[in-house]
Image 1: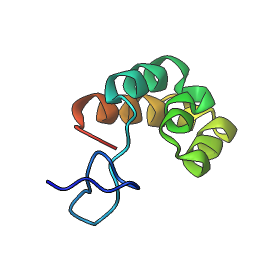
Image 2: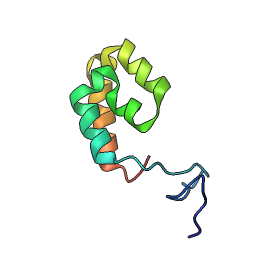
Image 3: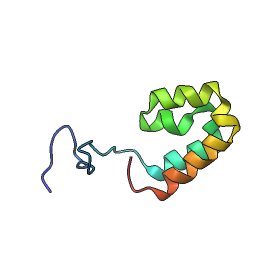
Image 4: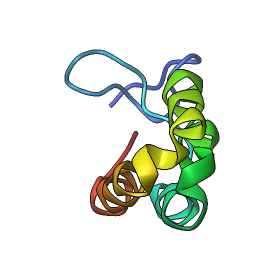
Length: 76
């Protein structure tokens, strides 16, 4: 695998660069503080983080599901 300056962790199948953020940290943040969109802000998904902040994490349901998805995924 070749390393690129803009994607030191490689690219996903759609050609997007992988993030250097920890999925465990993102998942725990999302489960504990998902009503504030904390996990989404951590991984750089600001738009979704704001939506979760305004809806209190989909009244907790969206935040919980999002947190579980972060914990079982390999990379952002």
